Image (tube, rainbow, N blue to C red):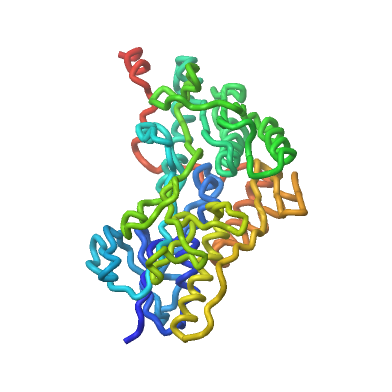
Length: 428
């Protein structure tokens, strides 16, 4: 009987592991809560109407041939019995395994203020992105007919919390959406009414980059009309907006990108976890004391040679997925095992609106148009298939030449209600 490998999560790490085991003498089961693989680095562009959902997602089972040894299940893991080597799911029952790969990813963390989640959107899933897109577009529709200046100002204000790459890219994209694509379509909305605020608790944005590149990104955001508030700690988020200290920024839309935490896979297998909940793993990505269970990607805390935990980036997850697949193949064949996992850092990039980006490739630092072009080419090549690359290239080309966005449709009959209780009272 062939060995059985169960992979939980069809993100970058899980998909890389599954592809690495295609053709191996094992039965692979890939479990995910959705039926698609999502290219998360471009999710913010769906949220800001630059791309359609199908541009950055592909049905997971379509990535494997029918005769491959990979079975794809759309299901949700409820628990794991490590001793009995079984994964318990909500619909498929118990799935036995000889090897288990946990690639469960991460969620956003509100640093103990979970009540803020009711009023602040996050960008982790396709549903998140579409919800943000709907709210941004609906806010403009409502502002067009809003007679109260204060309420109009609140509707046309968006606050992005977190000055990392996700927050910077989101703030820049929203500014371009509002100040170039949308403002021209509305008769009664003026350019100076649109306010995009990026809030960062630290002294600068993009702290993983060099200070000079952070300054370049800050200047690029300013040119887009984004108001950046540094050393600004959020004290509250509610239906009125965001409070920094004791100062309220009234805003109809708040987007949170300030911190992440691992999904609760450590509790499933009773494993030691880091502060963010990720599973502390051995140099071969296995769980201490459980050599047939591996954790990779955002759900794993891996100490690099310099003693620092690897960042939660797609390249880390993909490289770990390929490594674990190679390790399992070697074990099955009785071949020499590969040495400890070593992450090859290809660099970091962040785009800041139209034709502006920063890139850090170690000894090579890029900024401006060259960095933006490099970012575009790299992301095109990282997309899952030729169809996605073609559609994204066409959408970007159209947006670059026309400054327009292709996906600005509100498809629901009812749009979000942005009115605060006080605004509702005024109308009664």
